[in-house]
Image 1 (cartoon, helix red, strand yellow):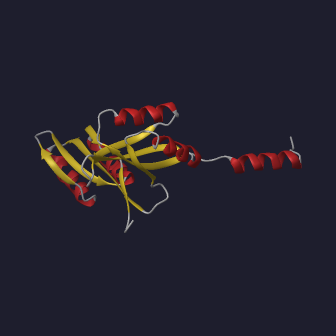
Image 2 (cartoon, helix red, strand yellow):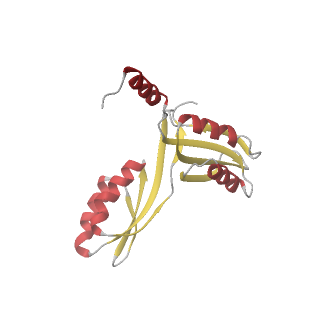
Image 3 (spheres, helix red, strand yellow):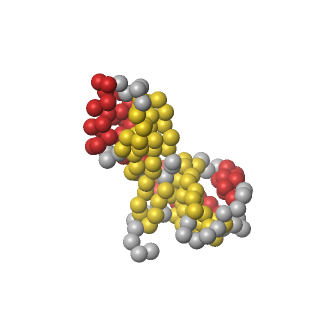
Amino acid sequence: MSLSTEQRRSLYTQRKNVEIKTEHIVVALAENKPGVISKISGLFRRRGFNIQSITAGHTEEKGISRLTIMVDGTKTNTEQLIKQLYKIIEITKVSDLTLDKKIVRELALVKLYATKSTRSEIMQIVDIFKARIVDVSHSSVIVEITGDSLKIESFLDLVRGFGIKEIARTGVTAMNRGEG
């Protein structure tokens, strides 16, 4: 079946106007009060956003927390979400760092099964990834690794063969590079 010129133009126009969902890193500064994270997650839920990760911590300003939220969405949806975040009284500032030059990090603690014969190989991999062993027992080691998500996933792929007993990941945190 062949498409007419008009049908092909219509399909091209439809494809051109479709926005692609991508990962967005949204940073919000908020008053450190009970219920703020609940309000934020409720807003995301109502808008149909899935939170990939959320981290929160104190800032240099007393009583203000920094929340770094990674979500999947289109540029338009994320812009709308940011406008909605400003409607939460406790939110003082919101930024989408997705397109900015930024430092993005995550921390993972990984408990691996380890025997006398596998420990040295695990230690070599740990050294290559500039990670560190923070606990050792007769049957396991706990490794601390920081970096971007790709580095952590690559590390996990390499050590999976030893047997991963447990993983704890912080989620993404991010900051703009330079002066700004």
